[in-house]
Image 1 (tube, rainbow, N blue to C red):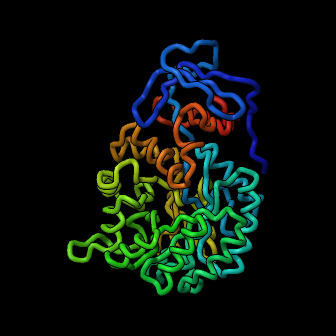
Image 2: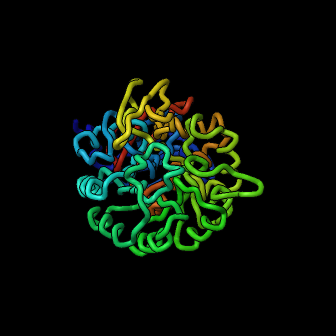
Length: 386
């Protein structure tokens, strides 16, 4: 399946827009040319343009943790079905997406990374995320326990090489032997070290942060609960200003009150909503595979057939955005920060995307009054035209 889009030729102005930025919501207009925003203004547009009828315009969503959708599973490395997954998420407003793998044999992980690197070079993916195999067997969730082992800096360097410069993140349990050296190797290779699927203590987590860990993989999930005598990784990750916390805001993984708690501590500048979406996203209930594990999806909730552990989500970023406003109580500018601005910063792409400003890519989502997606533009090209 190919990703279809409606091309925009020449300069185009979008007028009668309610433009949402970190500093507020402004009635105005923007001009796009050659895939980038060239002007942003308030009030009436200086020229005739494509009227958006007063609808909100937000930056394209940035999902830094996503395993697939529409029948496509990034862990398989299959390019054709990966394109289907990318197309699904683009229609839901995700214009920048990192493909997440799950734990498996090292040769399989290397092969999947090498294949997905082609899609990165085509501009369809923003990078590759290894979620495992260096994670805790006690907190492995939907990962195959038989695929897990202690971290090795040399082994991870081989995975980075297989990804041909497109590996962007590694999830690792800080307490494992060799973890701190592997975190240092990741950072030295330009890879984001994320702490997660971990049974670490508070102090072990802090050691992982000191070694270079700067992201918390889906905070709360697959780690010990917050305790008043044993605060564990949650407290260490939330309190450190160097760490951005991922949150799965689907109403199933984490209660909205706990999303709000994390947001109140970390703030919009350190909070990134993610989907953790898996192959069944956009499809009906049924039995699917995530890596080597069978997953049952019932009422949109994914759990392992054996053991019942939560196995990713069927969430899309537009739904996470709506829930952030309606259920968590974030303002529109705050919701933009946690779905676009902050994750773009995490990826080191703030100069290109994540905000609506001159010089940035024309990655835009047009939202109706009830925050449903009415249109999606990526690099100045309509994926779905309002």
